[in-house]
Length: 208
Image 1 (cartoon, one colour):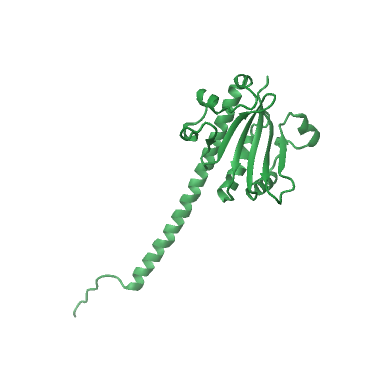
Image 2 (cartoon, rainbow, N blue to C red):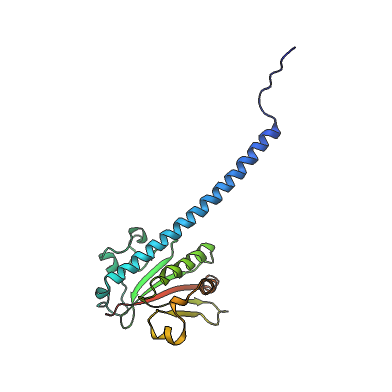
């Protein structure tokens, strides 16, 4: 009996293999994207925690600064800004891992204000917005106020604030940082991301 040797694969088989590779590639890319997003959110948490902890550590120093003053140079001198948040010679903003600009300035009385500025309607901004609130909420005993300012023609209530856990406004109004839940945060982030321009701000009192 004559043996017949077959070499190669049929076109149908090759197309099947390519289809499987395509499905696996799409799954791999999706998994990688989710992992990168998680990494960036964790990195943002680390960055915010570092700059807030630095302020708490040097509270007495910042209380001696002048109202209206940009505090970026002081932060830089004290070496309490992660180097990856500094871009070139910019002396007015630092940038988190999502490239969101952050200003740090001295306000009236003894308040230091941190402002995260959003200008793009992006799903990444929405997730980072929620993350900012969750991180800052952990400093509710130290912070004077936390909220948003959403600039939009259709926005009847552009500002929304929650107050530090021991502040009189917290007691009187019930708008306390400690009572912030996910629904509250999502509502503010929806308003923020869907506006023309939005900022998340938190005020920190560095008085004794």
